[in-house]
Image (cartoon, rainbow, N blue to C red; front, side):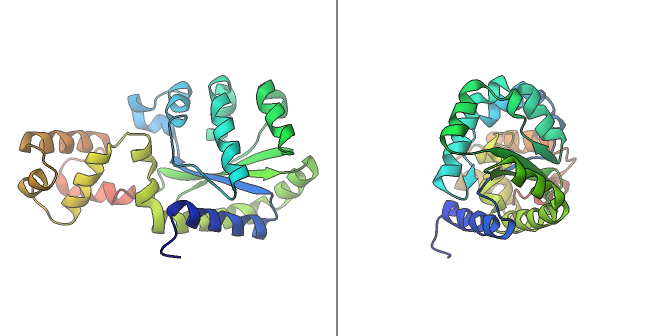
Length: 240
């Protein structure tokens, strides 16, 4: 298992989820719990959608599910209201009447009947969330799913915890959205490992002024007053 790629590891977890929850497919992304909390960098649903369409850290139980993710992303810009409701509701049944015609045709061609997105707060990092898009072949399966939704949410919360603990640093949404740049995330890791500014500057080929700039932006973004609090806040957000 350790030699498998991240995508393969998550695919295996999601495939087991399909079996345990009796689903056709599961699509998954590690996301911001409430995008608007990140201020000007993620303010509106339109901005969130624009940034989401650029994300590459999307996973699914099969290639069919992954292709659905990629197709759906193409239509998100015309579904601002739908996306807003998806973010605010922990359990969201995608309304067929609100889907673009092209999206409906694609779903029909793939024999996908219904989609339900379940968002679970990440116990490891409460400001982040796991969004699980559950794929079902028909409306009767949606009714069954909603009848046992408490069980489903508990299962997905455990799965999200497992993903966050073992893979959170590799798929962290703050980095994927570039709210925290990859270089800044690397600097955080060096800081957490006890490196000083000079060591970080040398190992990353940055000037001291460059290191200080990244630290200043990080403190502002994570609302930290000093280095100790910065490391603490970064840890809470699975950036370390």
